[in-house]
Length: 308
Image (cartoon, one colour):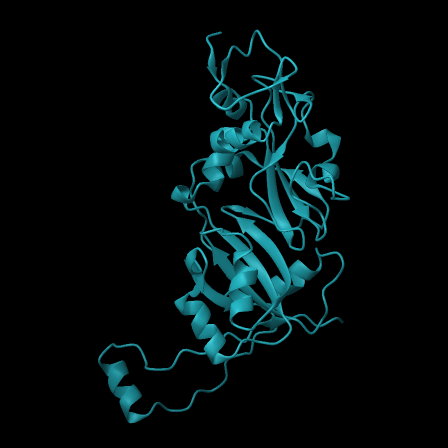
């Protein structure tokens, strides 16, 4: 085989994206025949032994794509001497092909929980992570107190952070009663019943972005659960459990297509519509002209889970 740049070989072997592979090399975590590799080095993978963190890298290894429900307190990095448990410790051996090692696709804060993907396909991971592909992340956000008008407007307009203006990729909305009930059944430990739940969608993906946005407006997040990455959803995956991605999920995420946020229009617990008062003169005029009724934007009230 001809010699190639080491970061390209690592990406092709599914270790990480090329950019992330450069970081591994620069950190001294990659070795060639026992010696520490250097950034930009070219090697023939058929003639040398390549190791990352002491694990051999197999060229042409079988691809694997796994979805994991990361519990709070578990670290999403693969190597952390201060962490008691990492996401790799939760992976069943049956989901990992022999002779391969999976790596997280991005990160999820240690105190956050929910969906995280792992793979040994570096190019696929790069498509999921790179902002130009616009893959959305949807989160369930639990607050101790519902948002007021000013807080809701601040989130709608965007919150100024060190990196710039932090914005949501879709309007913040209250979680439906059905969404909340289904999610609570998956979480360990169970959340406090008095929490108010919202759904937020991100595409920017800055570090601890949602926690910083809500903290800046005086609404600290009590529980933060990632429930969707593109077309892949947390649905039915209990905390600490993992599953293989289905072929359509792998294919759609690999194209960088972001799935739209799903919303139940009338889940259980939502108020039923009753008789409406007769419209006033101004409202009647707008209806006759085919224009939408006027109104002021409301504050998302959120969805609360009540233990029964």
